Image 1 (cartoon, each protein chain N blue to C red):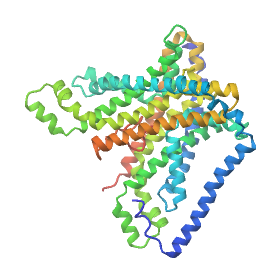
Image 2 (image 1 turned 135 degrees about the vertical axis):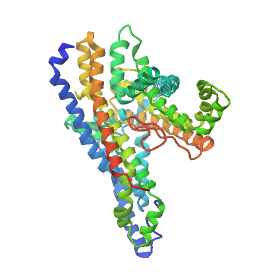
Image 3 (image 1 turned 30 degrees about the horizontal axis):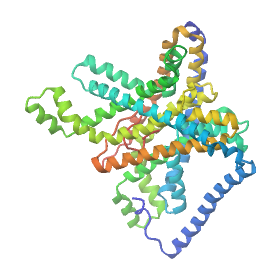
Image 4 (image 1 turned 30 degrees about the vertical axis):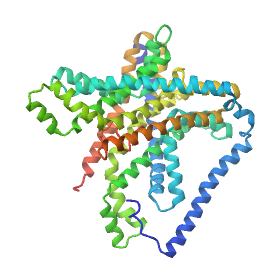
Length: 283
Length: 217
């Protein structure tokens, strides 16, 4: 598309574009230089401030207590969220209204409520003191939110299976649950995999919200590091890089899975909350 | 619970802060995001690369890290020292959301069929003219649903400001649950309903716009 918007430029346009490019380069380069100069002027390149990130003990703490705990929380919550999503996604297409409506209500509620509000409520009501602590509060909140998004993904995935498949299964005398479990779900999983993996990116990013309820993880370690060394700027850069690398790996896997198993087909999930591989992904 | 209802003005004021954050950062990130989107589809290589670097960096960074950057790290460089908290919150939310707006705009532009752009070029419109008269009016229609989900996510994301001392709805809920331990569930439901009203209004508005602007393809 973007190549059609402008044709192969002639000499004058090329000269003009060259001018724009130089201007753009000066702008972008100038911005980068300004930030670097500012960091230099404020003494942010002092070795002391970067020291914890090359000291083995701190690196170990950041990777083991920080990154590892963060990945654990994200992984656990996605596993639970898949189970939650499967149950509620199937309940939402149930023939029985007394199953369908409560499932719809639960899914809509947890998709519309901010995750942090949910996390704060769970932690201060059930997690604090003798409760299950901040770690599990994060996992439970993430499970409820991502599970509700995945419930929609499962529903959309089941709907994306060609209707002839279900009809043929009914024609040979299968019951509805047989049709779903034996015929539709195995085919739907393939279509849903990329959406599930991109939801893992969302879960991984959202583990950082545990910061507010003093949960372990990368942000908690980061806070410890910068309160000790008062190197806020450097810590944010390092923590952000760790998140970015982890997420880029997940995104790469999602793209690969999409290419390998699914092809062009994507599923779209309507409004409120976001899933699927479209532009609303992972906000 | 009585304590909450007798202090109901605090609840309303908290949601007013939430709505302020939503409106200000919504408008700002629509502007910045559209600019980034234009840079990404435009002919200038360096700007396209810069925009795409920004988008992929921000999309893979948690919002909370962006908030820490604006509230805690930037003052180390002498930026945002003494800036009002609401403005800092708006800056953080805008930096984050505009990356997603950029993606929504880009996918909207890409959804306009190539024939339209080819026809515009064939009758001799320049890049700017074909964008303004042909591509963007159609892209706007296609962009409503993804943009709506970005803005709805923004409405929910304003809650992160609570972790940085802003007394918006989530921060206020924490305050109330700390003081009224016997009515935590009710308080949670009350604040959740507030958010749900905001989200559902936005989603209904988006659906209305989509229906109104729908064109035969």
